[in-house]
Length: 302
Image (tube, rainbow, N blue to C red; front, top):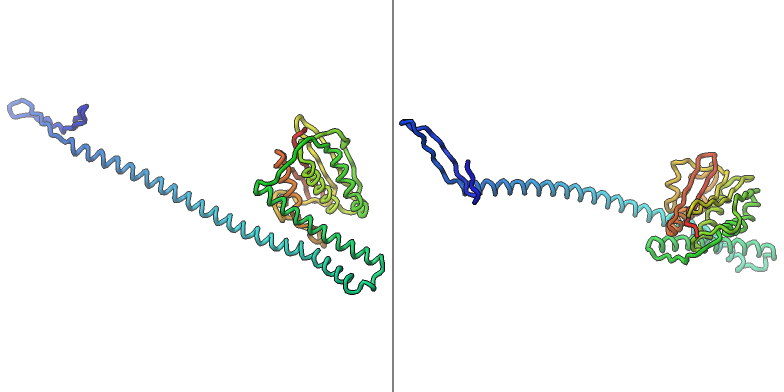
């Protein structure tokens, strides 16, 4: 086949003649060649289209699977939220309504000591409900990108001291002691003070709640370059290392010790991590069964 520069194509036949000469015959096959070329291009385009269609089919199948998984997770989260809210709100509400009904229906039956006791239980129930509602509202604002920080230099040592003082009474009831390592004033972080107090308060309260009687809680601060690490560690029962990732998710809690009920709604660590990440920081947790629990907030220094 001979093809010229202008795109014409010829089939060349070269044959010997009886008289010893040669006969060369040129047959114009330009249209045929063009048709074959166009067909080949169309076939290549079709093959490429099929390949892209197969890729898109795989992508759509993967997307469908992901959407189904997300839908299942959303349904599970909704169920968990409703179950948790039902339990965590009904329990204090029952106490509030029950004790207030007693005081309202027969106030003359109770002396000052009993009135004070019942009022304290009503107050505690209200505080528990308020804390749960605040945690849910804060997490909702963070998820929606509407949680506003008012950042500035905050003395993190003073925040640790305040958290210890706020939980000292509860710690004394369980003979738990606090050990402070390098927690003096003067170490500053760039943070929203209210958010920082919430983060540290949650961690110290958790440590008091889950540490056994006679245990120890250690508070410490370290600065490395432009980062400050706030550590709240206890020598309580700890949890298995494979549970650490799970307990950072909303409404997830560590498996209870034998005979002990679950405590709280499982939002504290989730909120601490979310607030730390808003500050360009992080929450790290370390634990093993029987070896205590350590939580570290990493934040930018002021």
